[in-house]
Length: 519
Image 1 (cartoon, rainbow, N blue to C red):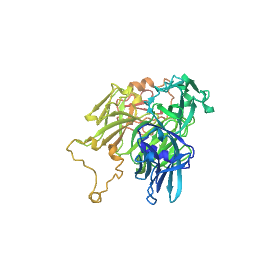
Image 2: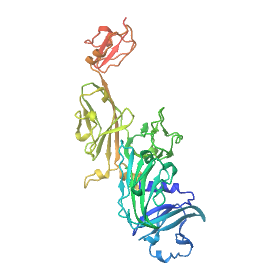
Image 3: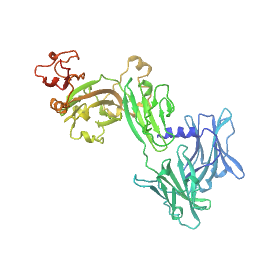
Image 4: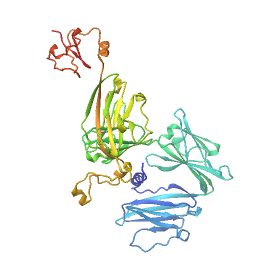
C-alpha cells in the first residue's frame, strides 16, 4: 500500500470522534506529526496537562497568532500539503512525553478529533522482521535492548490489529506476566521476565506489527518495532476494451474487500453491474470479475484482508485481431507479435493458466523472469522477442497466449524523439489521449496486445492408437479437418482425400478424425 493510500485510509478510519489516547513512540531528537486533517478549514492542536489544555497551534488565519508554551517555542510548525493540514513538533525531548489532542474544524464545526499518548524514548532499537516458518506453531519475539534487566525496569508489549491498526497494550510486566487481554491468554507464552514472547500462529493472522517498550517509572528507555514479512504482491495486467477479465485473489483473512478505480466492493455488493466478486462452493476464491472491460476500468486494484494485500495495475491496450495456430502434437509452434520494426519497445509474452490467471513467461526488459519449468528447453525467442517458438508440443501447451508490447520514456535511446499519437487539435489545446499524467509516466505505455489461440491435434498414429476397440456401428460425432477438404455431416466419402484411411468407417484428413455412420 502506498503512503498516500494508507494515509487516506487511516484518515477515513478516524473521521469520527476518538477520545481514547492512541500510543505513539518516538526517539529523542526526532519529529512527530500530530495527525492530519483532510479537506477542512483549519486544525487545532492541544497538549493535555493536569492544569488544563494548552493550545499549541491554530492554522486558522482568522484568529490571533498562537504563542506556544516556552518549552515548545521554535519547535512547532504548521504543515500544509494540498488538502492536508498537520502540526509538527521537532527535536523531541523526554519532557515532550504526554497526551496531545488534534481537532479538525470545518464551517466552525468540529468534524473529528484524535488523541495521542506520546512516549519519547531515549533510543529506538533496530526494527526486526520476524520469520515464522510454515511448520512452526509459534512466532518468537525478542525485545532487544541493553536496558532490559536494569533495576526498576519493566517491559510493555503492544500490537496493531487489523483493520483499525490501533496500537493496543496487551502485556505489562510491571503488573503481571499474563496477557492483559483475556482472548490472548493461552496463545501467548511469556519468558525472561517479559523480554521474550512465543505467540501462537493463530494470533499472527490479524496482527502484523508488534512493539516492545522498556520502561523505568514513567521514563521510556527504549522501544523496538517487530513485524511479520510483507506478503503483499503487485502484478501488471493488460486488457483491451471489450475483454472479460478475472483478477485472482484467494479468500483469506477477515474484512476482505477490493479497492478499485470505481470504488470499494465486497462479497455482498456489485459495482454498477460492471464488476462482482466470484464465488464457488468452497468459498476459496475472492477474485474480481470484470465481464466487459471499458476505458473506466484502467488503474490500480487492491485485494485487501487482515492477512495480506494483493495489488494489480490494469493497463489498457489497443486490441489486435486474434490469431489461431493449428499444430500437431510433437511439432513446433511459432507465435508472432505484429510489431513495427524499429520501435523502442519492451515485449512480454503471457499465457492463460487453467485457473484463468495470467502467467508471465517472458519479458525482454526483465531477465529475472523465470521460464516456467514445463517450457524449459522447449521455448525459443526470435526477432528480439517478437516471435516465440515452442517445440516438442504437448497437449497441455494448448491454450491462449498473449504478446504485449510496451513503450515508455525509459525505453527511449538518448537523442531519440518521442513520437506520440495526437492530432493538431490536441496539440493546440495541450490535451492528449491520456490525461492522467500522474499514472502513465510510472508505467510503460501499452501499444499492442495480441492474442494467439494455440490448437493442438493428435497425429494420425496417436488417433489410431487412441481409438476405442469397440466403436459403435453408427456415430454422429464429427471432428473438423485442418488439411484436405472438409464437409458437413451430410457429406459423403467424396469429401475425403484420395489417400484417406476409410477402414472401420474412419476418414483421416491431415490432423483430424471424421467418424461417419455406415450406409
